[in-house]
Image 1 (cartoon, rainbow, N blue to C red):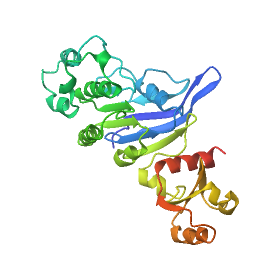
Image 2 (image 1 turned 90 degrees about the vertical axis):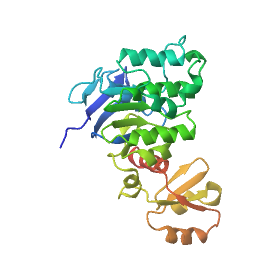
Image 3 (image 1 turned 30 degrees about the horizontal axis):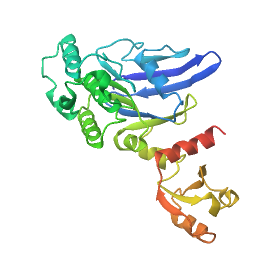
Length: 291
C-alpha cells in the first residue's frame, strides 16, 4: 500500500497566546478527494497554509509526499484570493505561465473552454470580477496536471455549469489528490470521498465519508424534525439529540422518525420532517464535544 500523500501529526499553530490550530492529526491518501469543513475562523485556511508550506507549525509536523512541505511541481495551490499581474490581460497571463512551465501553446484548450476564458481573454486582470479571477486561478492550478491540488473555496463565485464541469474534470483523474475547503457543504457531500470538521482549531471527528458522518453511531441519522422554538419547550425534547439554530430546534430522528412524529404530534403539528445535513452534524458535534 502506498504512503499517504499528506500526513499531519499533532500539528499546532499559535500566534502570541492564541491557539489557531490544536493537535491536528490527519492522513489523506493518494487519489482521494477530501473536504475540510468548518465555519469562518475555524482554522481551515491556516491548515491549508501549513500543508502548502506557506507557514510553519509551532508544534508537530506536516509531511507531504514524504517530506516537509516545500515548493514542488507535483503540487498546485489555489487560494481564495487569486493575486496575479493586475496590468496584464488574461491571455498574457496564460501565455506567460504556459511558457514558464514549458507547456505547448494551446495545450490546454479544453480547459480554457471549460472555464469559458475565451470571453475574457482580452480583459485586464485588475478589471475582472471575483468569479472571473477564480476561473483564471483554476486554469493555472489545473494546467500543470498536479498530483496534489490544494484549493481554498475553489468554486465560490462560479456559475453552476462551470462548477459542475470543474468537478467532472477533477473526478475523472483517479491519480490526483484533491484537498479543498468550501462553504457549500452540499458540494462537499456530493464530491468528497471523505471529509472532516474543524472547529476552534481542532478536528471534531475522524475523517469519514459524508454518509458515514450522518449515520455512524455518533452521527445524527439521515432524517430530522424541525420545530419552531415558539411551538415547543426545550424541556420536552431534552432527552433527544437536538440543536437550537436561531429560532428552530433541529431534532435528529436517529432511525426513530415515526416515533418522534407521533410524540411531537401530541403537542403541536407545527414541525417539518427533513433530510439531515452536514451542517446539522457539525453543529451537533460542536454542542456535544465542546460543551
